[in-house]
Length: 611
Ligand code: C2E
Ligand code: CA
Ligand code: CA
Image (tube, rainbow, N blue to C red; front, side):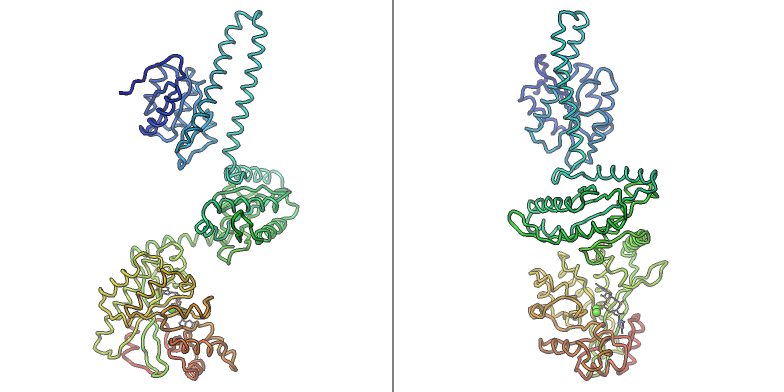
């Protein structure tokens, strides 16, 4: 049994929390420390408790059903009976706890869950001390009214003490407010404070036509890699070092803030010339390009910066921040380690991209995709030996959308898995139909593009097996086209997947060969069957009549590694003749056919044209 007996000498603390567990932990801690603790699970119980005996201190949870902490505090403050009882808020770390609001409704302090027991005690003790000082003053004041004369000296002492307590309380208050507005790791202003400053700048711009300001939004490039590989402590150390460098780069005109994670904001005010913002961005990029010598590691870190010009037309500071953020994303998309200036057209684009994302989600659910087939020709026989499957999106209002537009969005949003596997499934199904078609006698292959993202699916091989079994195709006639980025990772996981594909006799083709960064030594250690020479090289072949550019070298690389060479983007008879003279094995391109629907592909196959 839990006896909650009231001991009049002890300080009385009322705990209000809807979670019985929290109540128990806090209550046993405080009871051990010699406090009288009473518990309330909701507002009604709390009210009854206060009416029975007034507590000296209230610990109040923010997150409660019906009446939340802010509201409860406001009610306590509104009632004469409870107005002077100090209220300390309790919040979980992941609550969206609004500290400023907490102070505004009359809270004096806050404690975060999970509890640091020592911290809880210090905060409780300090508030109780303040409270008893207050009560003492109150008591003295009433006595004073009757005995003014004798007690003048005592009064003075008490007043002094009061003064002291008040200042220390004010200091505490402002310190807490300070904590609420700053980032604890770097000590920089946080997002809340930054937005307030932005708002001020915006208001000033509305009043003073000569006042110019700009906003820089900075995001570190690949910061996650540091965190993941070297650990969060090193990540924190690096963030502090970055903050330090940024500080020196933005003086004397700017406010630097940490907006969260690896993102920083810089507000540049009183600009005489707006191009100063560009100079600052350049200086930052230059500063960040130098190595960071941390306690245990030397680390390199770059950043991408979005710039938005201050403009009195903005209704809210958040919009300005959003635009700088959009520009920052553009800087990333353009290859990182650079700045980009916001242009209103980007906002339009961002909205369109968002629409595309939404449409794509719906498209996956409604299967709005098609597969087109482009023939691949054997240069020794001049006949079709297979097809490359290429995805198309049949958009309900925009018509056919090219994969160049939607595949990157699908990769960005994670929808690529579903789409790509659907293409594989359709292409295999098609292959099965063709293989059993009475008019088709030769064996043909189907090539399907496999996004690098698919390699991080945990069950890729199982999915592929499932598709092969369902569609009943011979895996030896299936080819998967991968890009150099897959190989570049050189991870054991990727190697294992490629190995398993090889065991199933599935062919692997290196697509867009020559456009990536893969070194030949890498190529060697992967089980590739063919290199597909990117169309840009085939195109340039004509321009370099003499040496035909890099194509001859690529074909001999393929040959020397025992792989086939496929040329893509063949558009002219001259290119075809050149490729033949170089002993290229296969070719693909508009000269033979554009990617076409399944029925047209069948016609092409049965008509058996020869090139
Ligand atoms: P890719 O794999 O390099 O595919 C070849 C692209 O070149 C196709 O564009 C094709 O229409 C085009 N092409 C073919 N012959 C010629 C030619 O003679 N001249 C020129 N200029 N272009 C030619 P498409 O169909 O628009 O596909 C673009 C890219 O989208 C593909 O490039 C591939 O990377 C990606 N993609 C298409 N379907 C899928 C898919 O199902 N999964 C994945 N992951 N990616 C796909
Ligand atoms: Ca391809
Ligand atoms: Ca290609």
